[in-house]
Image (cartoon, rainbow, N blue to C red; front, side, top):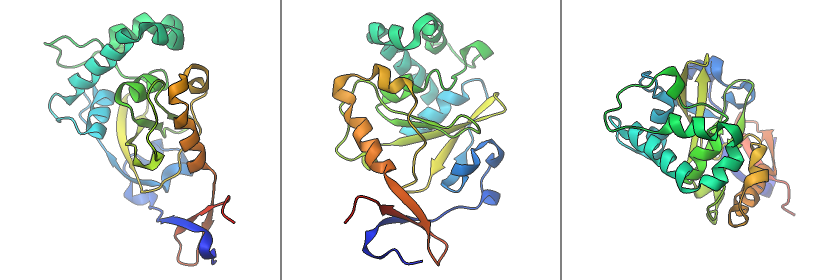
Length: 222
């Protein structure tokens, strides 16, 4: 099938047989996954996934993640009390990381979707949950958006049987799931540009070409 000059970009689908933890990924998004990156399952796996995504050291990057989340939640207390409601004190306690912290108990695990907005805001990244049955995209709440959404780092994660989080690497130009509903309610005025960039990325139609690749067509093109 030829799509002519309207082709904006092309992305090749991947095979589920080549993807680890494929049973945890929402089927509609599996073909947009390039690979999965497993991390140590010591209770800090969620924080390790974020650390891996932003390029922090393997050994203690998870500590930096927890501390940055803690700094965010106490530094902008009014915002996060509103966002998290009665869960504020619990989340603040969970992400607190003493210097001698080693592993993490069940009560200290990173959980989605409740910590999704906190992660994306603390690190100024797009966070995507591709877990089966709970796909959503989290955007920062209080930072000015980049000129191009495609230039912003994307961290995708999945939940394996609710006991282990795994980082997911998406293929180039992969579409994203719908926005997490609470973002619209709590986003600050300066950060609303993130939504505009997201909408631009989302207004596309995916068609299959004769070669078996996916061509993304801009519907607004003349």
